[in-house]
Length: 149
Image (cartoon, rainbow, N blue to C red; front, side):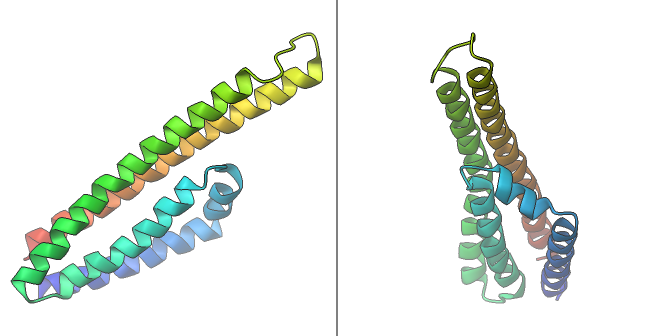
């Protein structure tokens, strides 16, 4: 019984988090500033994975529960891995911007290089942040649901 209750509580918590993120423009900010779109992919995967957590909370068959739980822990680790992948891609954007059209005598070219480097750093930080936050939230859900069983 507790597993079902926690599953529903987590559904409402996620709806609240999404509503707050939307209200303050966080989702739009991610969409506009993450050129790799990995953070958007992580959020989409997080939403899909929450379906598994909800199923994990309401499944009474222990064999199916164990399968869903094991898959859910794999997905939790995937969030951090995708965040780190975004970090690497962001650093590639930085290096790519650094070594293209190097001409520090021309102010406009220098401004473009700095803008590309800043965008790359933004991708690196945003994807890392989104990956870590989703991993923490999702892992917390799994621990609570497992304890409720």
